[in-house]
Amino acid sequence: MANTEKSSSAHLFHVKPIRVLFVCLGNICRSPLAEIIVQGQAEKKDVREQFTFASAGTGDWHVGRPADVRSAQTASQHGLDLSQHRAQQITANKINDWDWFVAMDDDNRSNLLAMGVPENRLLMMRQFETDSAISLDVPDPYYGGTEGFEDAYVMLCDNADHILDYLLNQRG
Ligand code: 4NP
Image (cartoon, rainbow, N blue to C red; front, side):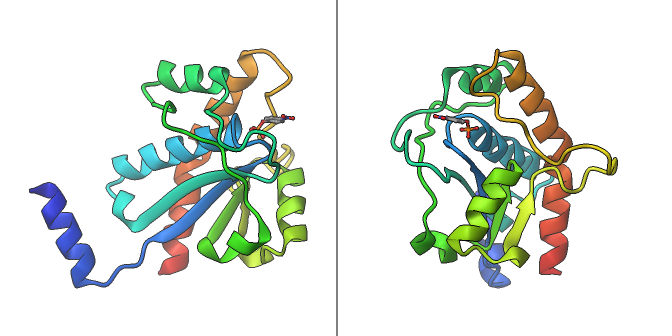
């Protein structure tokens, strides 16, 4: 019943989903976590139907592979499921499949700009944190220990609401 109501109201107002791609390097550690955390937060805020979420890497090394086991474990420790994730790569020919790109770190941002992503559709995952002294990067946990994955999880949770509010406001 709830689903029927939601889809019929979306139809009534002709609401196009806001298409958001979370981007890191390999699409096995950070951006898959970002995707499910922000999606979960959108569900809590009851705005999930207004969005299409996915994630991708700028590199192709892990295309088709599941999330890093450490990311999947971190997710499951917090009640989130990454088991269906398969890595994909963002390339220039797919830029217009997305309204917004959310980069995990400054290298990801530079790579997206070099690919042709317009600056006005490109956000940093941490750009709405208020302490301007901090780095805006979600550090790459791939070569470190498991604690780096929990740190990434906390950073992503701290910023999920900011990102959603910004994107909803941009649509007006
Ligand atoms: P991610 O982490 O960009 O957060 O998915 C990485 C995954 C793989 C590699 C680097 C970072 N790699 O060099 O293979």
